[in-house]
Length: 87
Length: 87
Image 1 (tube, rainbow over the protein chains, first blue to last red):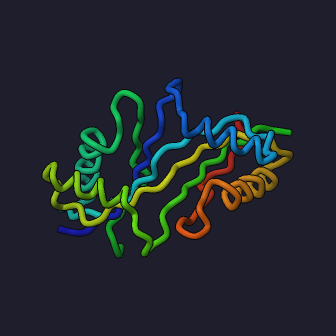
Image 2 (image 1 turned 60 degrees about the horizontal axis):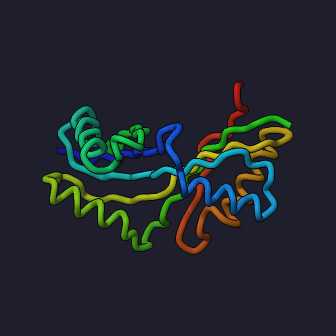
């Protein structure tokens, strides 16, 4: 087994209300940044896990996303990086 | 002015307690993923803004991070992408 560093991005699906994004958008405008057209806020998740190889690490992380890390109805997830620690 | 798409990642600084990461770590273990060694959770922010050019868009986004989007005491921020919309 080796240790893998995995970066996951979970974002609100297009068309789904994003209250956190709306709140930040409003705050930026009230701070004077009227040039901001849209703000969407998701999660940036860094995982460290043990796996036999990169493919196994990737499929484990995807299963975790489907089961827990991303809401299947309102969010999309993407694995940005799967890297062996110390590689 | 052109429209720019900016992707920002805000992460808890190393050594700072990350309760959300701890909670997810604990949940993954209770779901059977004992191979997970660490979990850290930050924000993935997508901004759309108007600016004269990419450099102006970048410096505006960095100012927004320092002022609002990232807590200067507990979080680090990184601009992952500054791209002209439709480019």
